[in-house]
Image (cartoon, rainbow, N blue to C red; front, side):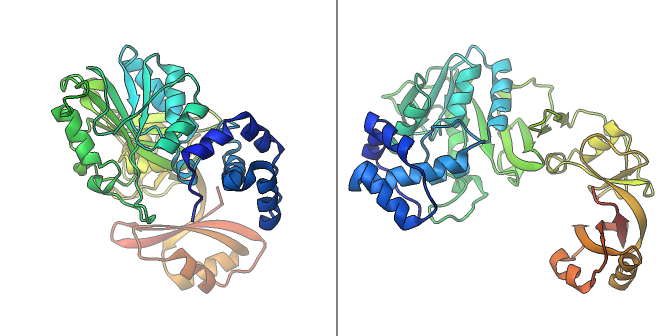
Length: 400
């Protein structure tokens, strides 16, 4: 069970004694020794907070600013900085003169990034511990304790939210009403106005919402979202961002894929891009588009942009005679109808001892198939198994 911080713990950690204890404490990996050292530096009352903070800072190193305070859940659920920076840049372009409220601010990651890009940013959270950590992490930020479903905001505010997608027991949830705060209720509050008469009420015509949620969310469950943006970072799909209509061009796209890379080689696609691409026989290369492109339903747009064709209209794999400069590409060595015996013979003939198996549209478990292939040899290969038309095909490729 994760350590449970208290507000006094945060007060100690931000005090002179706490800062000195954190500076002096270096976990050794030996639990008993580390607990004893933490007790010497912080006393019995705050030893757990000192030890947990040191461990969490080590986990956050290289991903978030040094010296921040975290809870285990806050670190696990924190938006990756490049993703938060992308969202802040989009908001700066469309809401520079509006109040932007991070109504699920937690320990302050998104609030810090938004504050660097916009002038009128408010962070809000109900959890007093996380809010105290946010005050330490983002000094100078405007932070309030408030319910995300009824924040005290002026007319025209933009609400930025990242509802928790796990229950207290750790079970992952996907339906809007199961999130915390419930996404369907949050959207209705935006549409209907905030009913608490003791607080400033948002003008319903001017209030907008940007929500970070699970990539697998069914867009049909969030009909208020004018645009669904799938965002990936370094090949991993991180979120689906839901944008309300007031932040967007009424003639703009409904679906967007944003591919972010820490090396700067990112790109974007929308459903307004050209989607003209042929269905064709396999060429020299198989191409696997980024997961954000696939989840956003923009495979044809990716193909058209890079001069590729589809193996099958229902398949995300593409093919061409030249590899694009983005996405994974595999040079096809041989291909044919899929059968376990035929595949085993082909791999043995090529001296393949290590294989990556990718499957689309077939009921094949790579972890079960791999031992049955009885591989031996010095070479590596990638095998793509896919349903093309009505048949199963196997493609033996050079690894990407």
